Image 1 (cartoon, helix red, strand yellow):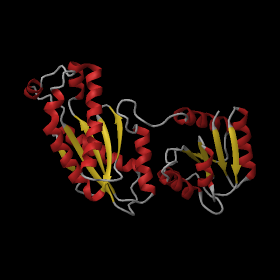
Image 2 (cartoon, rainbow, N blue to C red):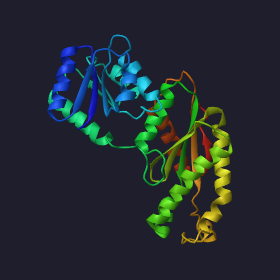
Image 3 (tube, rainbow, N blue to C red):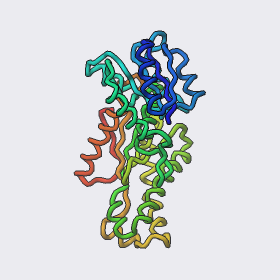
Image 4 (tube, rainbow, N blue to C red):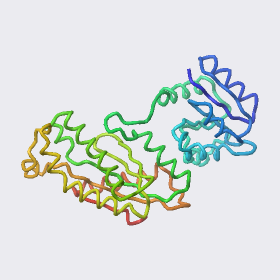
Length: 301
């Protein structure tokens, strides 16, 4: 059973959605305007927020932005319902950080199926990666959206641990996980050494990480990370639990090196979280094709 708040100024529509969700076992409350929704969400331990876009007082878009910028609520699933069917409006809604957009009139079977899928993906999920202890991929996207919703300037670094699959073939799954945890600790450690605040990290799967860093320090942070990684890599291989010799891996050109692609977001920038990640993905593909480790900056940002 999930705890759901439905916010829609059409009382009949809100009541209809609530009734159908209650029939399948969910606990539902309704509200007819956007004011106070964030405070309610903070106090109610919600599993899902369903928002009409056009609300009296505070619009659904603004409520979603407030949810995504909140330290406690930023991972709360949010679904828009709206009579607006224009693709540009739908994309604008998703850009506010919503997890879905359902157009009215609501088709009940489809509506219940979509809500069920969303709840299965999010209820009792803490968005923490089990291997690294950092945010997982979905939590990372919501973390980026949190800072966008606050209209903050920041740097975003796509950090790939190169040669990870080759390393796993020789060191096994346990060795691979040690390498991933080593990089996760390094991402945090070098930010701490530099005295940086508001740094956040996420594991996107495989050897791929995202680091969100204060904008003016991003390049310096990434350069320090790479330099320190190279400096301490030999001690990682010398660990008795790693069955690979450092010199051997170096000779084979199989060392766990780093490729770091960096882009930035300025205040008042309209780029979405997905667009920023797509920029990093394009940069990563280029650098992977070139086979180049190191720090690669997005010169357009």
